[in-house]
Amino acid sequence: MDNVPALFIKSVLCISSLPDAASFQKLSSPHWSHLAADQLARRKNWNLYIDNINNLGYLENQYEHPSLFTSFDDMPYSIIERNEEREKEIASKSTKITSKQDVESVKRRFFPRINYDHLADKNLRIKNLALPYLGPHSTAFLKQQVQKQVINSVCLLGDWPQKSTAPLVEALVPQRQLRMFWCSAKMPLSKSFFESLVANWRKDDSPEEKNVYFWNKETAQPVDSGVYKHPKSQWQLTVNVTSEFTQLSFKIKKSESSRTL
Image 1 (tube, rainbow, N blue to C red):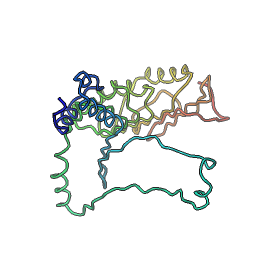
Image 2 (cartoon, helix red, strand yellow):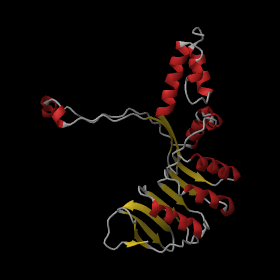
Image 3 (cartoon, one colour):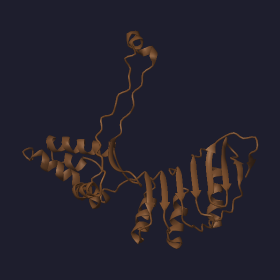
């Protein structure tokens, strides 16, 4: 097994969806075990960012690593005196795209190399999602992300079907890890959903920050505008209802004008 080329081993590891290196360690091959551990470590510590906006598109792999800090007391005086602690520039490459031919060249040379089906097979744990409605597959994809309960931020764009989307929204918004929800589509959510959301927040001894936005005047909320205090802590719920949007903001903030729900 140790005579197998490293490139072949890495290829096998890349297409595998195993959560740990235990299966490869059973092979009793230090070569396989080492490469498997390295692959899993890199898979854990890298995030894939894909964005597409009006004037910019980017795909970025960003390595997650802990930041190291030091106090002035721990630094040699000579370093402070000579001001040797300087900001380090991040090396990066960019390419100007100024014509339609440039765009087609990028699309032809770059995008076919991204195996999106392969990424989907990896049980991606998406943290931030901006999702336009492009058909039933958009609803199916959103349902998958709601069921994983790991997403932190969701932005729903376009005209989402109310009947199939509303239950997903009602399942997503109360999730503890969610920090921001933004929706521009008409979403007739049930009164019981909002009552349950507020009731569970009041019972929570350690609530988390959350912001919920509905940017559609036809989405009526059964909660009046105002600032409401949490009965057991300094947290409060701020509700802002206008003719254009509704916002529910759960944050720590002291206010003399707050009232208890």
